[in-house]
Image (cartoon, rainbow, N blue to C red):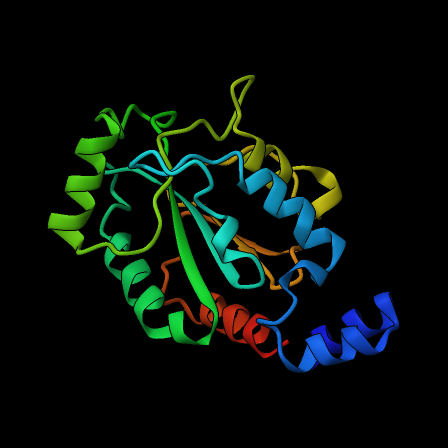
Length: 196
């Protein structure tokens, strides 16, 4: 219900109150923060070439994870897929962002990464084309996620670091790579964001 109050107070019109009750009617009335996130996300190409991989996720709770297929944390794909399946109907999505910046643990091309994820872990959540999360080639999405203004600054430490984005487009939490997808702190944080 908090998201409803935020929307009504920001726009202050009858249309907004109606939209708050029927969120699918006016997606364009989402808070400005989410529009900014969506603009950055639109710059993320999907692993099969989708030009706007994340735009359709506007208004959902999203867990963005930089992933790799040859990492000690790679088995986390199973837990990420389970979270995605269990909570998709409630407005949640996992998004995988393959990255080869840590120990060259994601050396494959996009097609190889997609095949690995689908055959080994039955991944159905959205996957970005391989990107960089740190340094001068840092993808715009990761520039935004790690910006001090979002409250969780600093370079990504390793593969499988997780950023939770709320429905309102703000970074709600950041989790270290070692925190498994089924860890109670992640589950509680997702539940809290879904309840907003």
